[in-house]
Length: 199
Image (cartoon, rainbow, N blue to C red; front, side, top):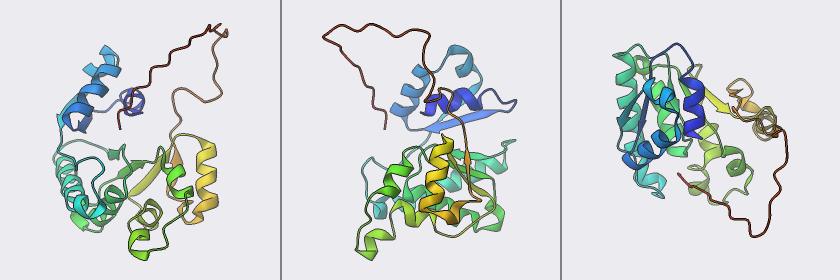
């Protein structure tokens, strides 16, 4: 998903910088075309450990957003785009934008987010307050926008969370779900499928 987004963003007539932890950075670079890699500046970024709890990662998420905001103010960047929409990142971005000096355009890509908010929520209020839906409902800012990959996903978000109507826009995926090749491939058993998991 990150490589597909970078292919789109890199076509803009603007400088693009991609921040990620080491292994993820390498994996994304390998998936990009040579011409796209040449248009992007890649930088390492310390991120919270995978599967870490909200409590253990929120402070690091906030420091991460602060670092990006400082970089934004000292560069010609037009916006900050988060390609991971964890509750910690969403809360951190919203708190960051409450500071007047740090009010920069922020976009958060919600790929996979619909499945999360459609799940049954915990009854424990301490768990509910740190889930994705609570993070999305936490305050409003004209500087914060959420992006989804399909119009149908946007419509579904509005059914579940109508309060986000003015905050969600569509970033069309470069490979539409209705797109098919000119011919069907004839597959013969056994069929082997390779799946690469980056998250």
